[in-house]
Length: 470
Ligand SMILES: *Cc1c(COP(=O)(O)O)cnc(C)c1O
Image (cartoon, rainbow, N blue to C red; front, side, top):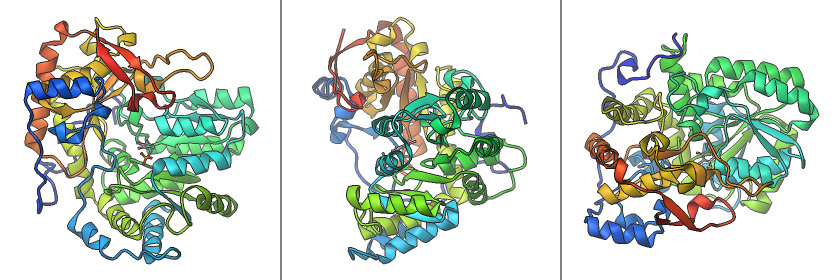
């Protein structure tokens, strides 16, 4: 395998088309708006796409979180909700699905991914301990910091370069990690926080070889390896298409092997699991499980619902089974690659290779004349909305927030605008509309100026910050 091969649709083993393994049974009308209406809407939203009303949006690529279309099977499952306060039958279905497909022994349900991140961070991090991770995720890092941890990025350098064609840009740099362990002492590392795929790097996967080597390194020093499994099905699919020895294995098998090298995982069911809400935390250590099961009662709900309705747990259990089918995941990632291929053919700067859930436009390359303090990726998101009513989001300096010690902006090397594709929601024609709008905004790039921030919330500022054009 060449690590610098481009992921293309043609690489999807033996199939000519990624076409969807489903048909549409029910449709949801969406709003078409005029340029004038969009100008008013984005102004009122403070040039922050998070503050737009969804009814003013045509194609909503803000996030793939909780935006999936459920199947008729999942909707049928909703009718089988057992809303008993304790011991709901749906909890046991969910527990069984997680054990079967992820392989962990003990399950703690949570209302969504961040509920699980809160519990695991509080349970495992002592104040002042280090938490090395393969790049950060916003809510993950915040919970680690709120528990007194110090996050350290140990991803490979290639991940910070939007043009580098490494196939597994989510990999941990084992030398960086071992240097940190030696410098700080193994007892000062809370756990290794591994995510597959890496959202902030562009949905980039971690290879099986890397997680195996990580397991060995963690064993050598007696450190726990915890997995953010939010998009691990997509990660498993990339292992199948790009890593030697996996082409003929079912995605479900690859997923389970990957998880077997880790000690536990947290999950945002709103992504891979094809549901609108839900999450979980799963571990193999019984003592840790006891602690987590006790904590969940305080923060989320009883340990057999964790903030979810019975019907939601049922839909998630069914969604887990659907999500690991090869045909499903091939179509899901195939649609993302399709959009990426169009933009690449038109020489529009995007993060490559294309990741599993989104296209990331490289706003630095789009707007080289706009300095990072003038929020180029935020501006790009606003311009796309103005052009066509497409909603994207900033993943750059606004999302990175301020350094808790110095109070200064963190300056991430990646300044990106994310076009996130919901699962089973939009068609290929919608992807064409998106590509054409990106092209139009790209053609007008030289006339575009930056933004100034006029309101800044203290935490996770990207959700609520407000801007004005310069
Ligand atoms: C969305 C997400 C989370 C947080 O999950 P929520 O369900 O939104 O609380 C954690 N990690 C990653 C990688 C995510 O994408």
